[in-house]
Amino acid sequence: MIEFVDVSFPPVFKDFSFRIEKGEFFILVGKTGAGKTTTIRLASFEITPKRGEVIVMGMSSRRISIQKRLFVFKKSGLFLDKPVLFENYSLIRNLLFVTDGRDRAYDSLKIVGLLGKKDLTTSRLSRGERDLLQLAILYAKRPILAMLDEPTVNLKDKKWEIMEMLAGLHGRGTTILMTTKDEEVVNRFPNNRIFML
Amino acid sequence: MKHIITMFLSSLFLFLTLFYYWQRDIEFQKQLEKIEMRVFIDSGSDKEAAMALIVNTEGVTGLKEIEEPDIIKNMRGRSRSEILDKVELPYVMGVYSSKREEGFLKELAARLKGIEGVIGVLYGEKAVAELWKEIREVKIILTTVGLILLFFFGLSLYLFVNSLAVMKYSKVFLIHGKRFGLLRIGVILRTMTVSIIVASLSVEISYLSHRYITGSSQSSFITNQWVYCFIIIMGLIGLFVASFKKFPVSD
Image (cartoon, rainbow over all chains, first blue to last red; front, side, top):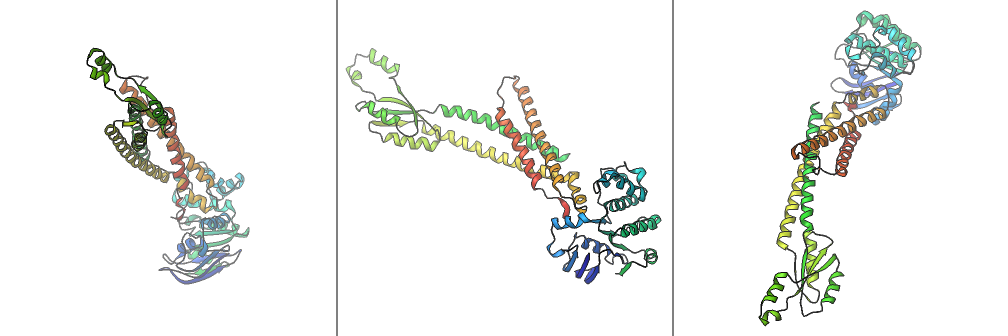
């Protein structure tokens, strides 16, 4: 599903390689500045490596285009450090953008605890709530690949609910690439493949 | 908002430039209509033959014979001098040309001079040259001013498109794998609407100012055809800018 082949991105990586198979729950662990966010940015083709190759769903970073990125993103879900949302839209409209099912949208908001704020404008949410909305969107989208950049960092009090949610998503067949620096999370999910940076 | 104000000011001044050009063009056309060639035919030659040749000359659209001026007739009548009676003045013809460009008139005059019996062609060469010099100068100045204003209009429109919230939404579209077609249509509609409204407002304000200054609704304002052209062109600029503006998805 995702493959990094001798990826160099100075000064963060040099000849960095790993491979995530379809259906895996892959946790990338590293301290601040280790390259967790860079990995997600590379895997989402936001940036391209100086050397080496990143392959996601068969699309190579060497021949990437907007069309190919759209193809990858149509089937994947992203949780970013800086949430990308429709700021002037309500929460429910943000969800209905990725799913036609109104029930699924409501369910997703309910899971993250934002159902009561479904009609609120996104720009009025707190940082933590914006992250919860990102998770709700990701959950409602039911992607085949989910890439999450430290989803628990701003939601420490809800991290186990989030991890349960991701486990549920994984159980439905979604391949997951998640970054974290939280050792508790790593220790509690020992069955997942963990990669240290 | 500041981009819309700049856009409006550019559009307003652009329309005023166009209005000024339209007025000057009417004046120039009136002056050009006055241009008439005087062809002098030797009184001893075959007048009918010379007239036929003149009519058949390329670029000539009309010919009229100009009678001997009354002052000459009176002089002949009052004078008892035989010499004056014997004086044969050349026939004078008024010739109208299809075009009134300086170069064309010069060429036509040269062609007419080549006709047998024609002894002279006059059309106020110096005045025509002066008029065309003035026309050229006005055209150059107004075109330059117009292009500068058009550039500012396009630039403000570009910055306006940049500031649209939907432009930022291209990132949302991208991360969810949605094509930009709908987003593009939204940008185009917004931009074209703003361009057309701004252009129409410029026309409206110019019209009201014109009426206020001249104090009459009967005074001539730029024709509807020019107004529609102006608004359509501004709308098309909006369409062009919105169609080719890249989304900031690679930021």
